[in-house]
Image (cartoon, rainbow, N blue to C red):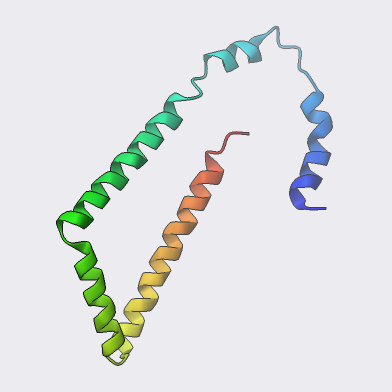
Length: 109
């Protein structure tokens, strides 16, 4: 049994429990906009990806990437290039981690 299944089993009775609040919770839930933030976030993501793709094409990103890969293959590794490679990989992992954390934080149940 996974942790999520255990937690769901533990909190299952609490989900079915109701609190007598004279309809306050229902009125609050009706007033919360549930789609505007998500739509704005998706539009912002699409805009940023489009700008990044346009800049990649305008500045001939393919040529730069191919040139960099050829240089990486032809030159022997030095202490500096290995350090830069490690830093680059670390930054990529850090950004991926932030993305996963932010998805979990703003996920709606």
